[in-house]
Image (cartoon, rainbow, N blue to C red; front, side, top):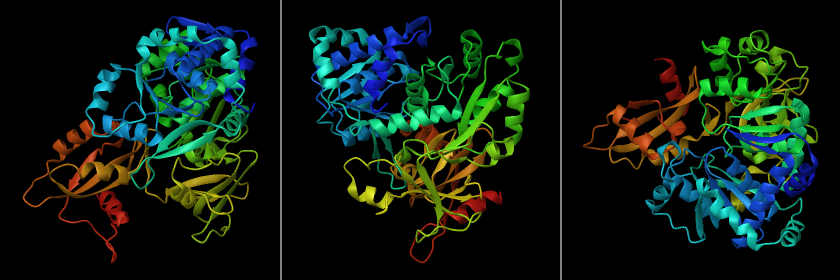
Length: 511
């Protein structure tokens, strides 16, 4: 399958359920009709070929219809993290030049429209904002566009056109839009589905958020490609998830290790029938070998896999295989997916010996075309020979299996979400009492890693750690908020003034 619109059309003839949301259910023919109805509504709204459509909303049927409808109409979607504050979302909208925005006012008590209006970021390209709770007022526009007009537009969408822009802040704190094409998105997640063994008769509970590759591409898009039933969950709540598994006979439940640890330790799980579960895919954090053993012995998972990837690699670089033993799954992130090369290299780009640490690089059809409107950053990430430099440090064994050991760019992962110290530091410097700040990731039993901030107060000011943490909660997405604030007189630096973050980690390790 070369394009997402082609995947949608191919699904029209399937039998069985395509989508389940609460009490609403769609067959595959009904699902495709909804998508095409949305696509016609986009055309009626004046969406031009290649224009960007931003979606700032939780997992829902409308998110899926908006995304696939925009793509069938030749648009490029821009998912936005629902945990973002107004200025964070505004920068993504401004950078992408999105012309339409879908929000969900009231989700987690957020007024997204007001959050945007309160920012100082200008959005000259944004001509319309719509609330998904009033979806019918948008979809009714389709009545003004006939099917033939949609078919003509859809025929223009090729594999080399952009399917989405997913923004990642990297180490600079400046959001960069990762471009993905239709052909690479379809090929990567057809491969992903084959490796994990996703089947047409599976029922997939998508708890990973759609704004993330894990929920969007390894989630509902993989279901579209294989015929599995999509069951989205808007908010992760463990008791709700357990009841959804039992009620909907869920077979597939990917997520971070914290999800499975929570299920295993939940006192109410024995009161529910969870026997339908068979497939788990995890990653983004260390995976305890004991957890894998318990998932197989105490639950009914017969396939538990780990994988590694980044947005710039269309979400996937390496994967374990279904016949790998628990130790391999727990201690590595698998080997390269078919058609992709992976190496571990030194600072000069030369491949290191097996077992020695170096930077992980990859090359193949999964590598992004580049960062949106940022050729300098693209050239920094992808070298002249086409190798994507991930910034992650790891080792490779004689089988080609990769283990991630460190992050060259200081990024850390909080419950499956990438947190970038430079971005957090830039935000914290806006606090009137903060003169300098350095953020590092530290191990956390529940979330894998969390942030710790070392803060130098401004002259004449005092910093109250608890107050500063509360301020951070009001000004940034929750996963970015440091869980600890340590007030210090100065930050350790080298001769050129660069903060020595390893010293800060050592201080934390020493108590």
